[in-house]
Length: 218
Image (tube, rainbow, N blue to C red):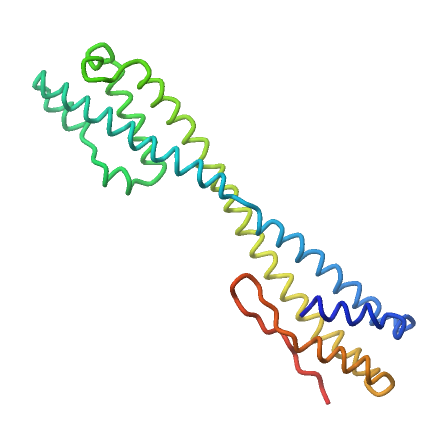
């Protein structure tokens, strides 16, 4: 609707070129449109790549932790070490439900339990490559968490900002431009009618239908 009003005012700009109040209000409307366009670009920024990377790393972390957990428990059984067996016991369901930071802590704990036993764990198919992989995954996943959160925060702030601009645009139309247009209603009826029609258009913001029309007097 804002775009429709802007277009009507553009098309009739010569009709009010000497009407400084309406000229200034129109320019303010245009600035609001530019802000909306800017924030929409941010909203449409693709964080799918970040999300996908984080999900892949998380799944790999879970698989690696389970591999180490199984090997450590198998080793603990062989040497009758119940304490190690208890400390290394993690299941798929629990790991999947763990918060990101907790998963990092679990991975670090498992790695700490395994390192002193690196020689012994070779018999349980945990070699140097597996140790290197888990260390890499822990480091990469720790980096992916703040990156994803930062991107989500930017989008959240943009949504808040665009909402504020919509509110300002509505106020500008209702309290300023609508009133100024009433002053030329009788002298320029065609222009006024085109403006009224533009004000009755319903906008769609995302998936939410937003009707911002404010009835004009008369």
